[in-house]
Length: 244
Image 1: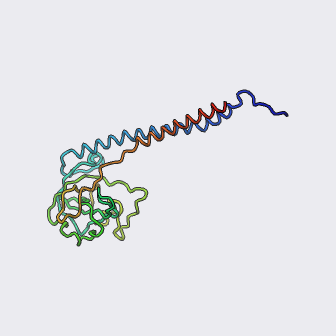
Image 2: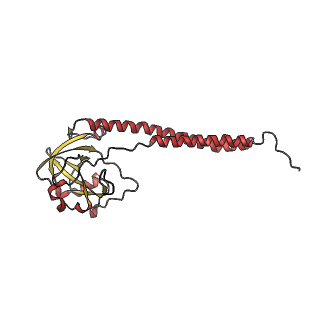
């Protein structure tokens, strides 16, 4: 059998074989870009909602907090009055102070029994590491009736790198309301009130630590996926033009 030139159209099997690989990859990249554009729209709506709710005047903590209401109340400014139970406070560890890079401490979570007899967890703000002990900030342990203005939040789920809570040794790294209700022996409401920046006696805790600047990088991600799809298409075309 003698050698010779491949028959005319001999590159077509290679074209179709590579197309079977390139086309699914191209469609996946386009799908990822489109998904990020959808996420961009969702995030823009969320940021607009947060901005509108922050601009509204604070409302009293609603008497009813069913799951449907929680969706519409999240990020609303509220006021709540009652008595702090400082002997049952919890510390949310490994927290940096907002707008102050490198300062690591904790958030002080203090249950408040409201004037209508409910118990709600109040994030009173940040304290430095050397002031985590209540005796180091006794002036801030407000006694008697108090009123707090803050942001109503449903605690987010922990991130993939967040350490596990250790209630047995009083170490808390994320807000688990069910476990914290057990630790404080209280029937806590399913929300947290994050106190605003109103100064506490003695200066600690430092309120206003709620982070409302939600990251919105979805346009960059979308452009990256679309660019990869375009790059794959260009490489595919140039490669097979060279083959011919």
